[in-house]
Amino acid sequence: NNNNNSYNNNNNSNNKHWINFVPTSHVLRLPVSLLEEHFDDYPHHDKPSNMSMNMTQFDETLNQALLQSGFQSFTHNNNQTWILKPSITNRASGISLFQSYTQLRDAVRSTDSIQRAGDFVIQSYIPPLLLDNRKFHLRVFVLLVGNLTAYVHPDFLAIFSLEPYTNAPIHNTRAHLTNISHQHISSVQQEERCMRKLDETLQDMIQAKHVHTIHEAKQKVAQIQQRVYDIVAETIQAVSSELTFQAKPNCFELFGFDFLVDPHWNVWLLEANAEPDLAMAGDRLEHVIQDVLTSALHIVLQSYSHKFSYNHPNHDDTHGNNNISSNPTTNNFHDCPNAGTNTTSFVQVYERKGRSY
Image (tube, rainbow, N blue to C red; front, side):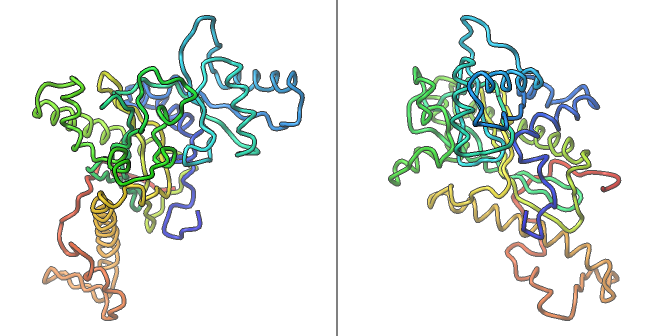
């Protein structure tokens, strides 16, 4: 990452193939874990490296990769759907759904035009909770600061497909993949149908007969929110214990975590994205993004101002003042919205204690 303020190595959190390795390592150390059920069925495998090989050689190499990954064999009359993701792509590039070995093989080969080398993730395709007969996932903004504190913004974005879900074949990816760049939005009306806040879907929950009252719908939203907080906290805990994630005191970074809610209101972590697209919220929800940025900046500058003031010769704690510097260029913190107050929308969910690497 070329941003000097971001973490030197965040592969553990946003490269998709780490979504299996890191939690697995974490669960081995902490058997009673929220993440345990998230990753049993999420194998990883390396793509065959020589795509010029003939079909027989390719099949042998792919079978070996599947065997090494622990991916279960396909069985006859098994209608389970799986989703294949290239590890390092974004905007839904190269993602495929499959139900057979042949479909998997064809998907891996076709993705070679996007990704010449690297890893894939295979995830069990989770049946989604439907609203207005459409699939959606949640985009949650997560701020990591220093070494290492995690915050979650409470305004969850619900990103919908534009195509109806019921009876949609797996090749109809616009019904199954809810990435907003995959929906080909062409009007303000479509943007509003595709991008909403989770707490704007209460009436949809009633109309879909998932709940009976607004009060019950609000309880479901609160339940989802708390579950997300817990999962993010444990995910960051898992990442922070890995030597390959280099948390630094003077770094911060904003991530976009994606979650899915299933028909039983279980919440599933799908992936974490570095450098999330903040423009995707559109004009109507621009105020959410503005609050994300303002609140994130407030937390970061307040944290660094506090650290700096207690190490600066001009610090005077006898009057409760944090005199950062007499140089006005270093006092920009005081010009920021909410500066000097405890006002921020983010919710702290995790803080690492102990050593840093």
